Length: 225
Length: 170
Ligand SMILES: [Zn+2]
Image (cartoon, rainbow over all chains, first blue to last red; front, top):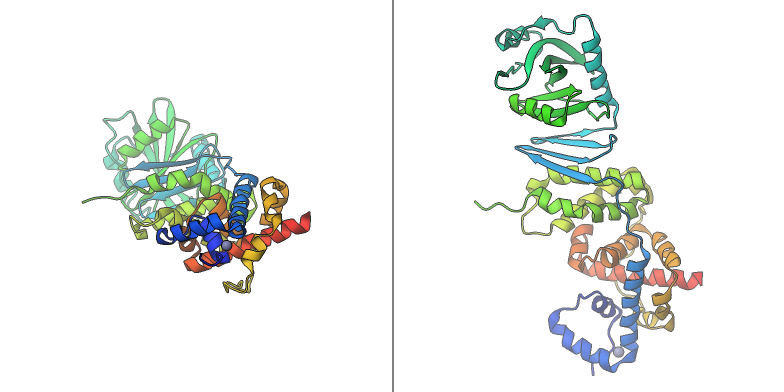
């Protein structure tokens, strides 16, 4: 008969970590030796008791992972507080709330002003060159004629010290602000306004409007996102 | 070209277990959410460096744990002196075989929980990973970046500490 199990063997046996080739000998010993069998039983009981005693915490908010071509969105849904956006290889951690509300407020402020846009044109061939020299990047103004969206015009905006292109787009009676920046400071979300962000052609786009998420996704597609 | 499983396929089912583990590490609901959030970010960003076919669970738990250790409360809660992983010097069997162990089956769950919560992190986490999350020693070793032998000795000592605490609380 083999010697008593070492303390480590007792542990490993209870954890199911004994190498298969050693099992027969150990199990034979456990059948004959009440001392070792008691020790193993003690560890097994403890394992079971621990599992039963430790409450399992569940997150209050569900996690949603959404994949689009070249984009993965990771966020805790149903709450404004924590939003993460993965954009291509670049990931932006969208911190709590404030930035999204700022952009939503900017959207409302521009729409409420007497002259919301500086270049008024539904012609993208007019709007695109207007931005040249005004913002440090080329602004992509796609053809929206096959979509329910209409370009109204554009202007330059500054947000957190960054120059951006602002495009005003309509869908029926609704107005959507499309902000285009080279890179995006932390954003969040806001319960009042639908916001969508994406990255295309090396630029970050943020669309804000009181329209549905589907609408903003359609606009995103029109803009190559 | 064969493609391995997507990040989502591997990571999504682990959301709740990861949160549970984060909650036990951080002992705070909001911090646990932040930890999980950051873990998913890092894991997504680093997914290219994950080798398909190796253990994703251990990989992402390791990210979570390292994120915790470098967080403020992780730094606060981690002993600056490394714990003694010297395996022997341990009359484990004699101790484990004493009749007191039998009362675990009826042990007051609250006392057991308190005993585990009071353990230093290195002991608390091996018990959580082994007994609550059902990790194999190999997975625990990968998660904690320690040898498998150390997992064994650390579990042994962790359980002895719990026994001690329970005996003291009776
Ligand atoms: Zn024996």
